Amino acid sequence: ADAARLAGDLARLIDDFACKGISTLRPLFACECMQPVLNGSIPGAGANYQAYFNAYKMMVDYATNTQGIGIIIEPWEANSNNEIGGAL
Image 1 (cartoon, rainbow, N blue to C red):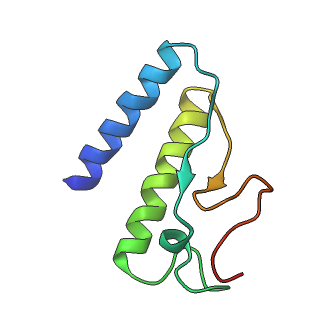
Image 2 (image 1 turned 90 degrees about the horizontal axis):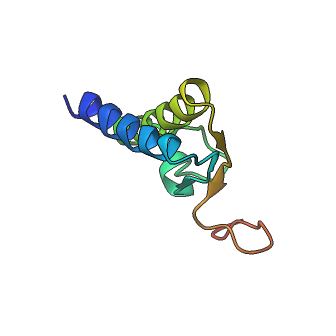
């Protein structure tokens, strides 16, 4: 039920952006929610990591495939030089 509600909420939000003529979105993501262990799997092991990944992918797929909106994928922790913070 929560996944279906989230899908509907994300679709309505993206539909609203599309109706306003927005052609590109930059949805940031948290690196530690995609890959909790450096050089580990994406998504990380565990239901919460899989749910975060699925929600992000669903949003990107809907925006690009259904609404034709371009997506810029960027981690939340990126600095102005496109370097990612943390334990790198």
